Image (cartoon, rainbow, N blue to C red; front, top):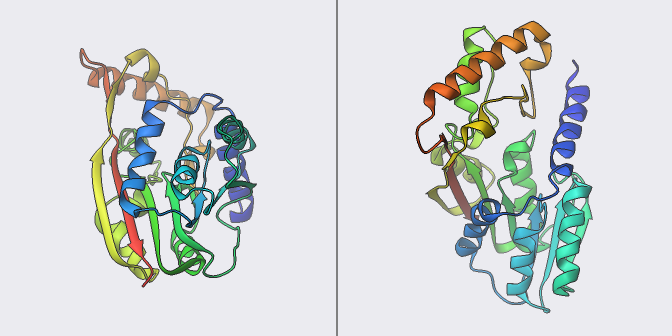
Length: 270
């Protein structure tokens, strides 16, 4: 499959996935987003860009901090997510948020437009993370701050799926691999020109009911490749059966552990 065709199908898959999440907001999604705000020291009157804003969890919190003198732009390519965000904005009567439906990886703004750029848990969906960070650097005013969050390479069931597929000579790469360690996050920001880089770590893992996780749908998100698209129906059935066996073997009285070691990363444009 050609790269451009794969990218189009991948982006459609991501959009469909998020469009279907009609009750996205919960304790987990909120609590994994808001720690970013503790690291960027927002002030009234600032202009802020929220990349992959989703249901506006970050954008709305920011808008309430920067006040009527400030402005927040939230960008996302999921119309379903943005509809949820718009509903919340209208309920709160906020006038300082603009939502834009667009692919955040390719959207452009004038240089030095924002004081702060934020991206909660979505940077790994980008095909070219270094290019995105270089653009964000341009979009920031001198002294501006970028903040994003991401998961470790060992998070989100990826290691188990990779392990199972490797036994069948199907080589998968985790979507979390490019930003999967504090060192990698630091390097990416430094290469884009950022300074005063900090990486805070927080374990957001939790136990899940075995009934919720014993069945794997065979899905795999990766912005550049997905070898699972080439497997036969029979091969996929084998992979799913082994996944079920492994996940059941790992279950405890508390349930199955969902590893979610999260990095909250900030850097400054000097």
